[in-house]
Image (cartoon, rainbow, N blue to C red; front, side, top):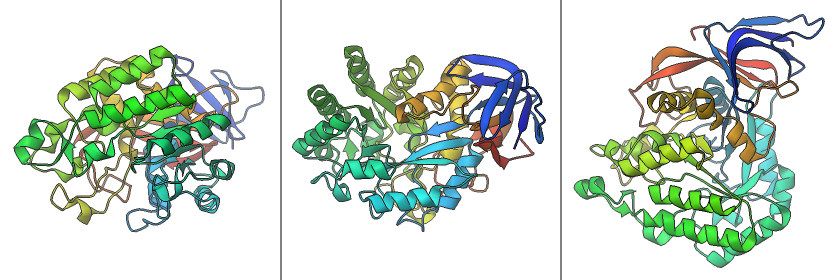
Length: 427
């Protein structure tokens, strides 16, 4: 199918292009910008006046809940939510049931997620069998089956000898390892940041040093092994400082934060708002500000949705008993735009954190608008306002701290491999 996207504001963070122009698509690829190839006759013209055309979003953390948790969400519901949110590529953690620790499970997930007109899915393989932190998985076989990196998701790996062996093995084959820094013993039983809110509400707390102690250990093991490590869901100002120093040292480290921690703090828990029951916990205003600054200056490489659909009943429990997680695939773009607007971040730089930068971490050719690149695109109206409600969210999980919040920026079209997989005439 040949498509002409006409007169849109094309922003490509990878090349720093930001200009009104035309884009031409054929055979699933971008074939030209500004001027059509000789003899180009489009099957479809999309009038993009007043809209912004960007690379499809690349989300490094989206739980699709299959296999094993289909009662929470399905591949169909969550991949549909991704397309509505302009997400054309995502990676999913291995904490399914059973965990993604066998090649057959990975192949099954890839087969279920594969389609001509669907978001690209890159699964993370389990770093240890059953995510129990004891025995390493067969990383080579999982990589051959389609795993792009290896992770423990939110499960702790307490034995540092096992972690060192995992990093050493991964370094031998140049496999990336993704780790969430939280010292299990310090975090045990905690549900909120160790600060004034947890004290006032009487909630068991998780100190900041639970993150920094784990992060210090990871960084030292990176020095020892040379492994490529991606730090997932950084949450604290001291954590940002450690990543900044590690990058200055030249360590092969990247990091991300979630949209929730970019905008919210412990104070948003209010009076036991279970939608704010997250891992890691929402921390202080000082921590939130440091995350915003780290994302702006490039210390933090990517912004993620940390999409975790949860059953409504599991959030209507006391804060300590509520299920962890928040829905976010459809909020990744508007919350990126909100951050850029409130902090005067150039739009191209802000969008890089959800397009070309996470694509670089994945090591894939996505997140760019250049001739020859896959035609994975997102078109949105930057001025359209909408409100987050259970009805407006297409994900099966309606759980988010942003329920009732007004958003600005609505996706009108999502294209994957040159196919229009989402179109909203109202946007």
